[in-house]
Image 1 (cartoon, rainbow, N blue to C red):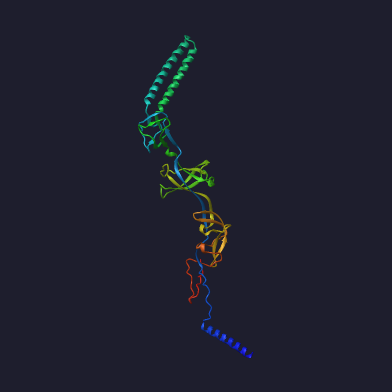
Image 2 (image 1 turned 135 degrees about the vertical axis):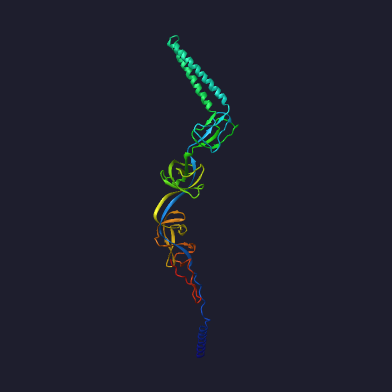
Amino acid sequence: MKTFRLIQLIRLSAVAALVFVLSLSGCGKSAPGKPTPPPTAVTVEAVTNRHFVRLLTVTGTIEPTTVAGLASPAEGPVLGCRVREGDRVAAGQELLSIGRQLSAEAAQASAREELRRQEQEFRRIEALVKEKAIPGDQLDTARAALERARAALAQAEQAADDYSIRAPWAGVVSRVRVADGNYVAPRTPLVDLYDPASLVLRFAVPEDHAFALAVDGRVQVTFDALPGRAFTLEIIRAYPELDRRLRTRSFEAALPNDATFSPGMFARIRAVLEEQASALTVPVEAVLSDGVKPFVFVLADDKAARRPVETGFEQDGRVWVHTGLKVGDRVIVGGIERVKDGAAVRLESDKPATNPKGGKPASKAAKS
């Protein structure tokens, strides 16, 4: 038994000696753990108060409100087409005529002669009735014949006018649809006119903004045909009904006198829907959502802190934050996809520091 105890003591002494030797040689040092990853690099934006407006952006077109599409009331070949597109015409000016006018003029001359004869006959019978040479009822018969002759002449004169196409008012020819020699039937379109003084800017807005604009309101407008110029125009008309197919409401704005406009010109329109004199805004990409409520990440003490927010309208890539932020907060806007709540972060402009003895990197303090 004494021998067994002696052997155990010798073994324990040998193990203790081995451990001591290994500790002195460093062979027993434990392996280092996994290195800690460096903080995520981010960019931030300091929250400030700013003037913020909500804009409605739509497109529009210059259109005339006084237009005329002249058609042929008679049948025949086109003769003497005297106008071209762009010509200015005066009220009553003849634009073209329709052939077969000679027959109409002949019918007019015959009706005029018949009226002259009936007038003479009426005067003769009137004189005889006064002398009581004939019964008075013959005067009524003569008067009826005279009125029929007058009606026939008026009809003949109107038929003759049907062969002469004239401008109803002063304007500009926008389109000539026929040429000399074309044979036209009644109601065939011939010439289109518009009044340049009636040009307006016409545009439509979606149904959800149908009542956001009103007459006497203002819109900011630019035209592709007038680069470098911007105009503030007054709304002069709001259509009472919405387009049932497109679900839009049309408006018209008056054009200024210091520029030249033509029908069909394209316009880009911006109208102020809502305005905040002092609002806290952040870039749209800085606002995230978990499906329940939006939130942002704020840089605080070199860490990302999740902050719930309530937002308003968006405009030009920014969103109005009602609650959840205050002036001076540094909201993370870049590198946000790699950020977690409470995780260490550093400004992208800062370089991660390293231990001079070759140890693991240490983050440099993030400063504003």
